[in-house]
Image (cartoon, rainbow, N blue to C red; front, side):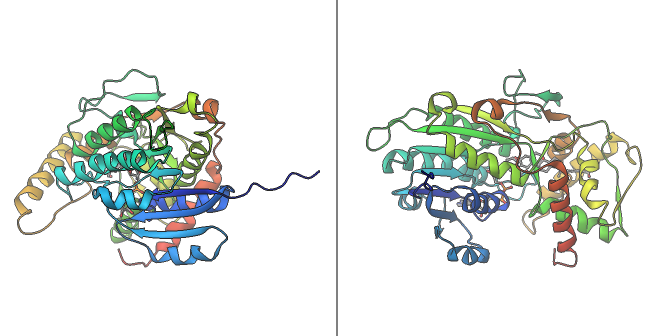
Amino acid sequence: MAESAPVPKLVYLVTGGCGFLGEHVVRMLLEREPRLRELRVFDLHLSPWLKELKTGPVQVTAIQGDVTQAHEVAAAMAGTHVVIHTAGLVDVFGRASPETIHKVNVQGTENVIKACVQTGTQFLVYTSSMEVVGPNVKGHPFYRGNEDTPYEAVHRHPYPRSKALAERLVLEANGRKVRGGLPLVTCALRPTGIYGEGHQIMRDFYHQGLRLGGRLFRAIPASVEHGRVYVGNVAWMHVLVARELGPRAALMGGQVYFCYDRSPYKSYEDFNMEFLGPCGLRLVGTHPLLPYWLLVLLAALNALLQWLLRPLLLYAPLLNPYTLAVANTTFTVSTDKAQRHFGYEPLFSWEDSRARTILWVQATEGLAQ
Ligand SMILES: NC(=O)C1=CN([C@@H]2O[C@H](COP(=O)(O)OP(=O)(O)OC[C@H]3O[C@@H](n4cnc5c(N)ncnc54)[C@H](O)[C@@H]3O)[C@@H](O)[C@H]2O)C=CC1
Ligand SMILES: C[C@@H](CO)CCC[C@@H](C)[C@H]1CC[C@H]2[C@@H]3[C@H](O)CC4=CC(=O)CC[C@]4(C)[C@H]3CC[C@]12C
């Protein structure tokens, strides 16, 4: 007798579902999670593309809400089976205050955990970050590391600090009893630098290159490798984890997984040129054009200007002491933990990931910045 298709019965909620990664998670769930009955998309700002999704077989519910408001989170989560918590304030440029970053990333995560307990949601997947590990303030390289590689994770910047605190809360919550008496099963995914369709910083570099007559200038030595992962593969890992947390709770509960695929190890700038090159940009210089001490000085000057101008305007350039330190420190991942624990294989090859990203960069040409 032919096997019948599974009856869709699960309710998922994706926080931050209108963000760069969140949108890919939402679309991937609709494409590849046959057990889905309802998908709730929770975000501070709802995107217009959500309307297009409402015509399929899965009920898509858009919920405008704030993770820092416990009652809004609890109301949205009532009756959900799985929550994928991607919402976060991704700010390493000094746009938001450290207090706001903490509030959204840590308190927001605390609210999601509390809501799981209160409403009986049994599975929580948290989008953490490589930044939870490093690069650390000492600039130690992390070369082809895995989840068990010893590394001195010391942070001073509010963003990595908040992600580390939030990740700890999520992992500590594993096993806590939720409403109805079942244990909460949690796990954290740590993407390295995500790229792909919708990546704002890539778009910024592209427009900067266009303004500079089709050129970008090398600032970081080509020998400094930076881990990158395609957004579609990060989304796929979230979908798989959410699916496997039930059957493999004993193995996966309370675990962390780096998000990885077969994207090549390169410097941040050389990697970006994989996409920006075919779009007509050129990276000038085989070595950094400015000496490192001058970049450090410029980054410090930017930080000072940001502070001085704050009462008048928001000055938040890409270069600051923190972004320079991250870009200038080798941080690469080499692991198969996700493959061993839940059978993850990248859904998109490097060639596909590259081609999709190039198409997207080309399509952004002429768009307002
Ligand atoms: N972009 C990257 O390279 C990496 C990102 N991550 C993590 O992935 C997650 C998603 O990041 P991206 O998609 O890049 O950022 P994003 O800024 O594009 O998306 C974040 C989403 O969260 C929403 N959000 C922010 N504050 C909220 C609040 N108070 N209540 C409800 N929703 C709120 C935003 O409206 C946005 O739609 C974040 O948790 C981030 O820390 C981790 C590693 C790398
Ligand atoms: C010195 C400049 C010369 O061109 C280059 C500056 C590039 C930086 C803006 C980026 C270099 C590394 C990026 C970070 C990294 O990919 C890890 C991240 C993980 C996250 O969870 C959030 C984003 C980010 C901090 C990412 C931000 C941009 C860079 C610092």
